[in-house]
Image (cartoon, rainbow, N blue to C red; front, side, top):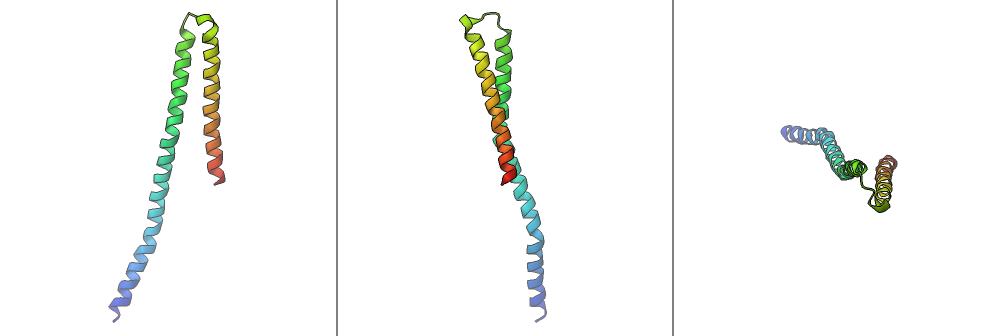
Length: 94
């Protein structure tokens, strides 16, 4: 009869001890998903920066449209950077 309580205690103890491992794995998975989510935004930022450099290097002003496009790229960069900052602060409040 002493075997059953010991067996039950072993099962309960192993279950309790494995909880932190599941929590760590869950947190790691969440962080990885979060990084992948932000990756699209950071890739977009890099793409816009690259496009801006290429556009700045062109000699043609395209009837003033080059300057308008550069301002639009600056605004797009600003909005993406603000969105990343918002996401970081929102995450801290949760």
